[in-house]
Structure formats: structure tokens, C-alpha cells
Length: 417
Picture (cartoon, rainbow, N blue to C red):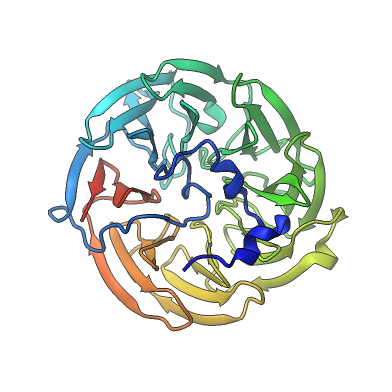
């Protein structure tokens, strides 16, 4: 299933990816949710069946704990992890050889004397690395970020300036576009969004949120939409959603809707941005892209509460939007209207944190307990298969050249046919 060519002729509808993928090689998975940050796997088919003893090309124990997804480029797999150390933490980046699974290099980015408090579901290394042009950018939320050489892990720069008071730790991944890394820093006070120059590590801009909520913290991974030729950062936050000019950080337009602790990355398509605005009472909003100032009254196209996700990002495939609630209820709706085609429970005994992925022409939903369910694409609900691995699985899997890379709380697996 490929997108109609119409999609690509309209700048308005062009999601981040087509642009950010420049500088990434074919077969790379350089960031959270893939080359286009949209959960789509292009290229070779990956295995339909796997287990701890089936389809395992390799399985490598990873020190410490991290819920960052693997990022792949130049024959290497990049991960971050937090290794406990006498009540403190060693925040690390590591690279594995994608063919053998051997750890090629491991580098401490920062040592922390006392581990900050985090949510039981979180880790101290949850944001996913971004790989571009021989550098891997790692982000540890309020604990800072760094650029390392992909070849040997040599540190190119560090930035510990963008400090903020997180609640429950950090979760949002950086997004790369036009030479900038954009991060959302919604802490308990003075929430802001920032862009860092990828070459120097210097702060390009820092924009405080124009709406401050009763509760401000969130864990969102932003996305970029190109509207009339200009890149805009899409960043849900406390009690509102805001779009910022990528170059300057100026807030361009906003939508007000109460909510906090936002996690999922927004979806872009059909001239819409589709996002969740609240963790506790999740609701998906579809908003027409563009405008100026407060567009709450004019630009909301549809809203949908039932089955909305708190953690996993929604997945857009052509005209259909697929999503799963944290409690395991999957849905398929019309992305343009919000009309529901189906809503079905996939698992009764596990929650869901990982984002669904479009691969092998089907949708893959991964539960937190290692259970993965294949669902047919389309307006009729059909389960096409299930697989499982031992351990906890909160990280979204990565795919490259016919292989799936799956992280558990203890191991990184490479599965091949």
C-alpha cells in the first residue's frame, strides 16, 4: 500500500519525514518510529513469526535499563541505557554491530550521584536516539543531551543547559529537521519547547509555553509539518497544543483543550494534525493545519474519546487511523472524519506503551508483556497472528533490511526470517 502521488504534490500534506530522511540512507531506521517518524516500514518484509527460540539472529544482554527504541544506521544499532551505580546512575550510549549483535562501543554521557525519582513505568533512558550524517544524538530529558560519533562513540558535544523540573522522569524523544533537534521540556514549572543546533549543540531557541496549566508536565515527542513551505513544530502540551516556527521558535497557532502528561507523537496527514491532549482522560483531536493565534473554535475537525491512547502514538495508513488504548483496546477510524470502523480488545492481561507499526502490509501491536499481535489493515478487524518473547516490552521496535530489532528490559533481539 503506497500513498497516492497526490500526497506528495501538496506541501501542506507532506509530513516531516520526506525531508528529514535526506541524510539518512535507505534501510536506516534513524529515529523514533522510523525514517519518517510515522511508524511505516518500507522495503523488505520482516519476519511474521518469532519467539525466544525462533527467528533469533542474535540476542544481546544490555546493561542497565532503558525504554528508548533502537535506532539503526551504517550497520550499527544505537541505544541508550541507565546503569545503576551506588545509588547513582551512569547514563550511557552504546552501539552494536547489526550483523553480530556485539557491542562495538559503550560511552558514558553523564554520571549522576543520586538517581532522580521516576514513574515505575519509566526508565532513566526513555528518549530514542537520532542518527544523522555520522552523528548519533542522545537525549536524557532534563539530564541533558549529547552528540557522539557513530564510528567510535567519541563525544562531539554535550548540552546540559536545558534543565527543567521533570515529573516522573523524561520520555519525549528529540526530532531532527533542517539541522535542528527539537525537544519538548514540559516540567512542573515554566514549561518550554527548545531547538538545539545539531552541529554545535548550542540552543538555537527556547520558547516558553504560552499556556500554563494547573499541571504542566508532559512527555511528548513533537513532529514537524511543512505548511506552505515552512517547517512547523507540532507540540501538544499543558492544556493546549501549539505549533512553532522551526527557524525562530515563534508560536504560530494554538488549540486549547485541558490535559497534561501527554505522551504520544502526533500524526500528520490529509491537512490535519491528529494528537492526544490528556493522559488521564485521553481524547484524540484532529485539527486542520495552519492558521494564526487561537484556532480552537475554527480548526478542530473531529474529537474522539473512546479507546483513545494515553501512551502509544496513533498510526496513519492512507485514510485510516489505527490506535490502541493503554489497556489494550485497538481501533480503526476514518482519519478525515473520525468515523469508527472497529474497536476490539487485543489483550486483557497487559497494558500497551509501544507505538503500533505498519509493516508487512499489516499492523503490529506490541503489549508491555512481550505479546505482539498482527492485525489486518482495513475496515474489517482480523487478527492474523500472535508472537511473544519473555520480559517487559515498553519500547517500540525498529526495522531494517528485513529484520526486526526488539528491546526488552534485559535484551536486544534481532529477528530475521
